[in-house]
Image (tube, rainbow over all chains, first blue to last red; front, side, top):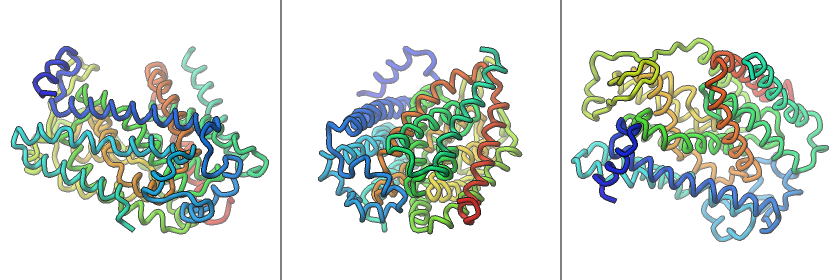
Length: 146
Length: 310
């Protein structure tokens, strides 16, 4: 959406006059992502707890394992690490990671959404900082650091 | 409800927090599996109520209390703490940005450094033996208690001249102060020192899953001279922009849905009530209660780490 139109829409709300166009766009994208993340999280947890989707680790067996460290837990239960969870997304407990991942990703998407506004203003410093921030988040998400 | 009654109700709520907590230490095997997520929900609901008026994020309360009294390994508690802090900040940030109570220009450079240092902190945290991590956590929490007890606040610091770096990055803004019914323009100073400080904050936040509002707000307000309301809002924005530590925990399998989801839902529902409570009770009274809770939880983590109180 064009920045001017976005600004016009938001100006309709007098309370938003202290926010810059990039803040308003960032807020809009963030808000949509957060809502989507929360809905996915709640729905997947209901599917998990109700037993509609069978979990990888049966819920009544969890207390036998949750005192273990994350590495020991993964080894003992066969819980996937890194992005291997995607292959087992049909399991009730693993599906919950989808909402978690959406919530963890939404700020990077919002930062990318404001890049064109900084670029149009020739604000090279914030373009560079935004790209670096997204790269750092992408590297941490990619599971290449050990 | 009158303020004294509300205070009594809050105390009862906090006592409710302690019930499953003590049950955890006394009868771990006796509790059915579903009792734990239910207890987590109740505890986080209570923590969410007091966190908002006390001016702290959920993570700093969650990690020592759940880590001290629930049977989960500290890896899952720290992962949960990071997600609780992230979710709370994500929910608050859009509104704060729209009202000009959080600054994207201020948050972006600080978030970059926090994101990098959080990765280092998370990786260190996950290789630390549990006893050492508990001891260090207890020490840090007790340090936070001292910080919260002694830290001063400055509503509008009134900086005379911006430093060259913040001027180059055009870190400034204006917000509407409803208390005085006037627009307040703000600039910042000491940006290079603040950048170094935020590196340390990021390491600690990643290592212990604490969130970082307890350190962000004083740094932004007292060191950089950001008005208190914008400092609190921008702190939330920085938390929401820095999910790098959460990613490390996700990739290492340290996010357990049975721990994370009831905690997030409980904390969010509690926070909704906490926002309303802010209007009717004295925030300073709740803040003192939270400091007492943190003191207890910090001592518990320290003694658990040292093997004195298992």
